[in-house]
Image 1 (cartoon, rainbow, N blue to C red):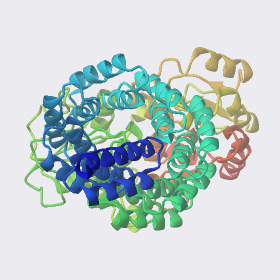
Image 2: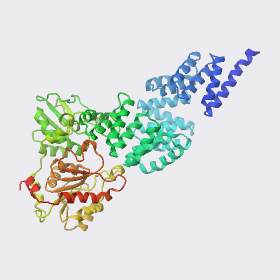
Image 3: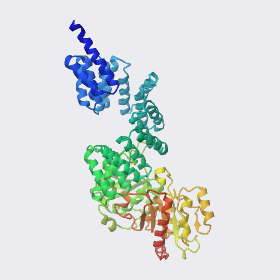
Image 4: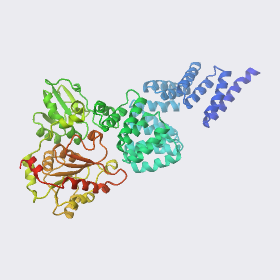
Length: 617
């Protein structure tokens, strides 16, 4: 009689354990399964369920041991393989190994839901988006309340660069499981990618209230605030996230970057060094931001070598070209041809291009690849080099093969600017401009020898919320024009008619707009017009860089820029430039009086001598 009731006793125990598992009482369920396994060590269901509780309690290695043992006892249960795949995923198993286990489960039961779900995840990791999408669609059709399918479908769409659609699936996951913080976090990541800052603020506020003390939610709030350039608040949130989860190097990076942008460079370096110790050996996000922290502290010898990590950081937004020739690492190239190319914006290439004369002296031949407009300007300034438009295909592979090695403009500093003293020792200015054209522009101005000629710009073409707070509007720049009896020349590219009309109406005698100069596409024209100025006031754009490379006194205003400032108050790249930081907690317009004060100081004893000497007058 006892032998007949024993299986039922085990079965009852397992049913009770399953009920506890479903209620989230994993430890209680585990105690029951341990008792069951002790009484019936070869009961595959008991061994399997015990393994599942280990995974649910955060012990995937132990879980793997028990689930594999259950499979050895009974190799024909699809759910065993599905939970094996889930555990392998927790342990970082490869997509191919996950697919093999899922396919085994599906060979036993083609409808095994968890195996299909994990197969979709594995296919997503392999970028086999079409098949993965079909799996998640079928899971949602079969069960419109299956939260995991919505969340994983959203992750697939993010990986496929379809964030707009991903938001909708994460939103549905939140509705189905409002007590799961992961759904809020993934939705916030999608919003961030789309720069949908305002809705994300509301949603993360709800998440912070619902999950107080959740380090991942707080971390996502810090990332949002960073993107909005709310650096002071971002520091507070990222510090909270790090305190709650000190072993997560990602949170350390976020704190370090926020400290850096809040001008707390010493602490930033300390935090990022700590993150480096926590991170795996290959962690380009850590290395790139650590590079910026070193540079912000004036440590160029440690900063420049790490700077190339930006190419492997998906968040860096730089161009990563592909070459058949090696990267130049500073070896002798006196008999070789080197090609220099830009991976960032025009301003970054212009800044680093100040090194080109020294590279020409060292190399047998120098080729400079840039945009079409950039190539024209580079060719004019460096006639001993060959400047041309970028030679690459849609896959960013080189299509010209007339050089022996390559390097990006930004990485030249690693070989030519190892110390701050090396900036002081460099030839300056390195660039040239069309003097005849500059003189012709100057002579179109009335009383140019009696009044200072001040070039000005107030914004970039990119008015994303995270950048716009450091720019001004046309009306907001007006106090600058009101202060001086001067000639104010428009250097703002990409203007709209209403901006120009507004300034013309407001300052009919002071404001000069050269309609025949294309300030965006004609860099030679822009450089000539800039060279005709005594002084430049500009937002942090290429307008300021052109003034800097031509040795024109300038005020530049913008956020923290480690590769530009290198731990100094003003950019070592441009000795004639003054860099000013707008308030981090107020609108940029409220900083204008400080800009005016500095401009007044620099122009107090103005004479046209410096400008006339530059123009050969």
